[in-house]
Image 1 (spheres, rainbow over the protein chains, first blue to last red):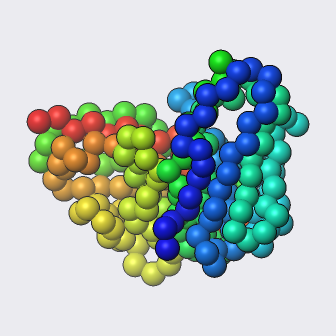
Image 2 (image 1 turned 180 degrees about the vertical axis):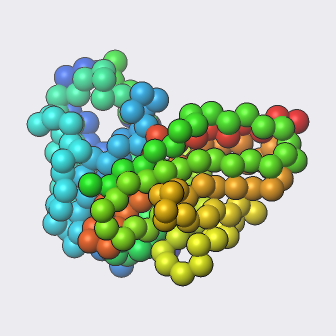
Length: 114
Length: 113
């Protein structure tokens, strides 16, 4: 398996524009996580899905952020409209789906909003 | 609710010296504990994990950690570090009733020659 695949690796956009980040989890994994990493806040859990259903989105910062998982092999994180303070590295991770197993991380998407 | 505290934001150490990175957790249920490492411009990868059983857990690259329930700690240790161990290290917790994986703020290990 190629691991968790995220795209794009880098994204530079202007304030106010819509940004969509994409993630393909490892085949057979039932849980998917979106994290945001910044110097100030560290690694924050934004939302996680289990069997394609959002279980906990309490970490989603604002209504400008939304995440979907239309099927077991694809998820998106959308920011609309984007703001400079959204600049961060966004990681997607997947796991087999129980608390006692590790999460596998993608390489991340570095988002810069100017 | 579960939480993780990594008290040291940075740990400088000379090559071949021992190192300990501290992690304390808070949880009201049974916990599973993890240490991840992040090299520059990369995602996180698992170093080791504690699920149950022996409280001393060995991981990759010569790292080990000890689960101490009475002190709610899971400190990471290595007897002799190498330059290549320079990275960010994250402690994380999940539990019996959730897949939610909560991370600490990370500790930057800087190994000097």
